[in-house]
Image 1 (cartoon, helix red, strand yellow):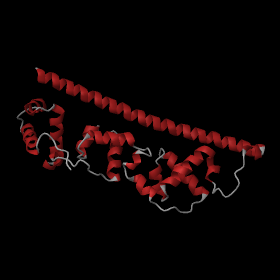
Image 2: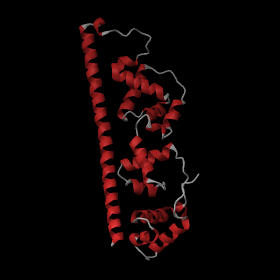
Image 3: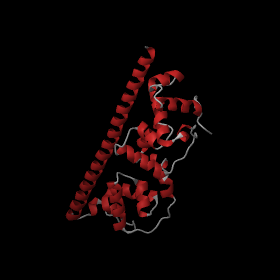
Image 4: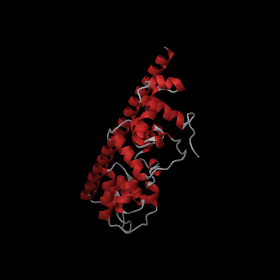
Length: 246
């Protein structure tokens, strides 16, 4: 099923060609068919970037590969363009689509949209050593809790990575033992062993705290950029409306 535009492809092409031929501005051409200047601008850029096919009605449930979504999100996070810019560049029907990808990026729920989680979940479990589990968890921490990406990197199931991360966050490297041995309680430890465990807990708490700070900064950065884009878009729409009333 397609998302039907109230303007046909032929109408869009006519407006784009008029603009490219210098027969009007975004505002005046938009006024002639009842759309705002940003819509006309988007059509023009899409056409110039991708040709006539960019003005076709887009499928309602168009699918994208995980690699494509990751590339678009990474381009946004790297400051390579606004949602609108990247929607045009990658021929995506709506900038809202990219906004949603960015918003959900790097969360267990959002990873479903990238189809990474499903792929990682389908991996067969394999034997791992404690040293390898530590390496996997460290990689996951360094990559901001990217459970699915870590699972794919080390060829282990998503759920394993998720469980190992949480065991490490709770009990440190001891939590990554194979569980066949006896895990001593604090009261069973010598003073030296207890001190070592406390130092390990302090180190883990610091790692988790630093991780949360990084994630918070990333979220705040995205929110600020989104707010700025929406404010600029609203200002353009407001200016266009004022010009239309003159």
